Length: 297
Image: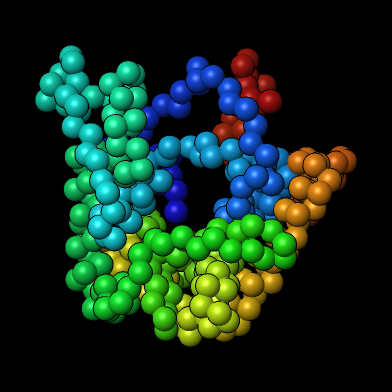
């Protein structure tokens, strides 16, 4: 899950480069469709087209998740430890020519600060210390983050399961809260069941019709003490996820066939509030400010 804007953290977020030159729009039909493309198609055409441009925001939560995956699955890592010019005791921000040179030099690697790397190692240690998660993630014969390129409904597809072997599939999720009362709701909102169903379908295609019997999510909290919780997706949940992902794939194909990449609705949508709560109830300060100069609209 994304960190809330008001969450405190020992890491500094990087400001987006708003002065970067605009790139040529990528035609989605030239790329295999990944799950995040399907999920965006489920929202609207504009978001789907944007998802194919490959310019997702470099957020703190994204970097922490990427770092945790890279450290856990022993993927290539580059640690950014360039000291700041004004204060050598601090790490320089990830910007400017030095950072760009670092990116070019370490292309294809997870690029982390020292603090982020330490954070990722703590998450890895928590996973190894959880007997069930360790058995599912680090057992013999596991395959980590190996992409599957395939075809579905006549559309090129690509899927990269986190960890798998012949009998089970595991997705690693970093989250603010892994508690069942919270995570189950978040999983539904984020479409994790559709994501795992999509990965399962890709593995089934690669294995000649044989899909993993068991499908799991290992959720680990990205704040101390890094609590780990394991979830197994039920057959009913996977069936629902399968229907959802196929509906999204069909919608993507409609966007591509028509070349229409619009927003949520082409018309004016009604806005009706089905309860009668006055602004004083929603915000008591509204009453105090009413009539004052400079009060809120």
